[in-house]
Image 1 (tube, rainbow, N blue to C red):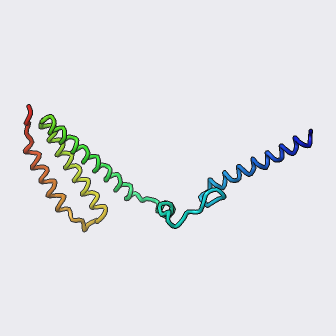
Image 2: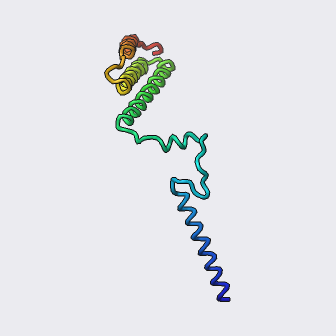
Image 3: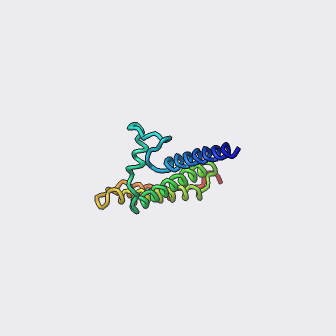
Length: 141
């Protein structure tokens, strides 16, 4: 009975060592026994490996883009509330959010183009938003 127990313990330990070895190899970025090599068609995997570390400018650009998207969302939400309730407050906050969104778009354009950025279109949009904001009236008191 001692020989059978000894062989069972040895077999169990070999299987356990193999399991941990395969788990270790799978945790590495290299291909292993269970993970196939990335194919040529798997471009997302290659893009993930080749992607450079983002710089501070990239992170600031993404932050500006997020702020711009939030300002546009707020502008659309407030304008919907203005159409629904007819209050001048919603109209003005909608146009303030649109102006804020245009300012973030200007800053993003400066990040992309630098000194050569053509900001005249955004400047005219801001002036138009300011003139439209002055026309806000209560239509459902």
